[in-house]
Image (tube, rainbow, N blue to C red):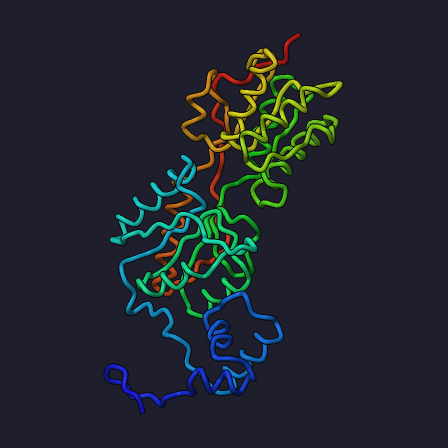
Length: 347
């Protein structure tokens, strides 16, 4: 018998026993227990079956009754004002809830490009009560590890559609794409292009879908060559804008799916001696500080980044208290912020 606190429990098999039962080494069995990815599927299956068959007791799982006042925020990067807005929203909401926030900038990756589990180990070590992931792309085994240890977590603007049951918060990206395109159409533009982000990313595909829907509703012909992707990179966005300008019939307006990419669009137009909005109307997305700093100031779609982050923190607190949200997906509304970068087409 072993004693933990005031309760007595029967000692289970050691990891060495599990490894022998599965026909693997102890380090390999340890990798499976800790959710490491560098294990062959068949080996993982054998070890998992041995764990269940022998009743191996894994490391202590998250216990809401013993939860600390810490929550983790894992952000894609701390180098952008986008992340700054998210951090501001989380910090304000955490302060109101009496919680402290530990921030990790990005997920450490292996040589193969897959995220490592080092931050998960640190999460357990410091006793965090829950996790917020911002723009994170988790692997199947990482989701499984979090669920196995019963650690509450919420995704803020997930890169891909998360597995069923995962709680996430985002913006109404499809509606934002509709609104941006309808604004340009209302000014009289019919040749409207879109420079999107990553082709497979949820928010990017939703914004392009909104763009397409607005054109279809207005009866405006869609030009396949007017739809391009720049991976939310301003340098690539500059190249895409130059390519659009080189078309036999270039657009007169462009919906750029992030304010950061709009910086590259402005640069490309300046290179060709074109002005905004006289020669090209531009609409961005996000309403970051950069949108106001541009000349002329950028008309854009505001997505409430700080409010999204605060909403995610509130949902996480509920989950830490054992309350499951009614819906796994929460979307906050977007709206048009009209400035000086749009006007009717010349002539």
